[in-house]
Image 1 (cartoon, rainbow, N blue to C red):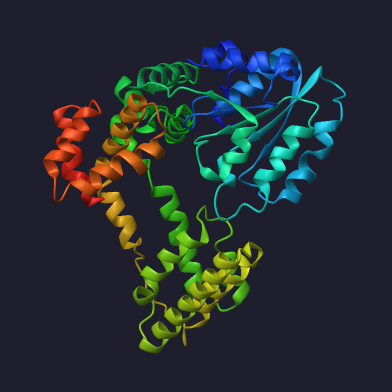
Image 2: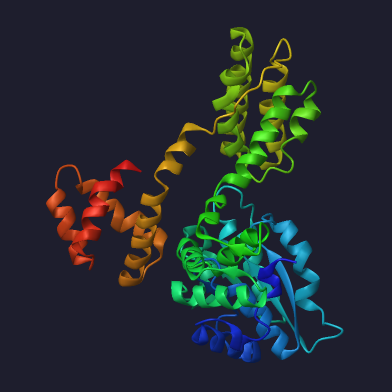
Length: 406
């Protein structure tokens, strides 16, 4: 059983440091008919308690929760199919019902096919309280949803709060774990308690006594093993279906997989004609994807992956029996090398977002972009600007030195 479920809050009093948000949610559920705006939009960074708060409060009130994850169901028709009955009917075994739509910011962008408008209609038609959740509610694509919702902010959890939660779980699971390990997990989670708990459970699967060096297994390793195995099977495949199916259980988007295939064609194939044919199929897949994007025909993605996986696999004139050490894409290697720098920059962005009362995304797009434009020609102006934002000299120097390298 996943520990995030096993140790999920049983009631709202177990939610960490979100008392104002909890109070607002409870009042809305009990008095939603009196509210001018007919839904709540809970927002804040991942892993701070938005979803578990809804379920904990529902349990206290004797309500059932009907949940929809918006990032999984984007088309208007599918959203109505999932929720039409729930928003109008009555529960058999509960006092009431909460309609909960999670990850509404998953609607934003190219994949949304009327989903935002459908959610607005759900909010207007529902006889039950509707609660939505998002990490970043300020995306322009969510404007219609924001107009009918009252926003409720969830605060980022501190490293100390996450450390205490992990220590409690470690004790309950009878783990021998050094405080340094728990503190490291808290720091690397960047305020996300859920990810910290998942990391602790991953480490516990190795042994009951966890040491600081065991932290090395976390990171990209699991995903790398999956993609390496899938690449090996794809390059050996001799049929279209075999080439496609090997990626069914790889937790990556096709566009991400595309980079791994491109990196390893010349690494796997030796005959220049095979290499040419493989890259030719990759270019055709990229052209097809461009047409899908422009015309918004996302139902045709399966043909993009068929051209890419099948084309590359069947481009070979013979089976290559040699052992191949597959490489991760060069851009991933660059990101991996700069991981520590990026983590510290992310922490600074978090501090800055609290100081200017804005989301990390907006800090990145507005404030940091200004600094980015000043670094080359006017570094002193960039430093002065960061000082005015309340950053310390050492933080300013770090940003100036590393921002351009990412």
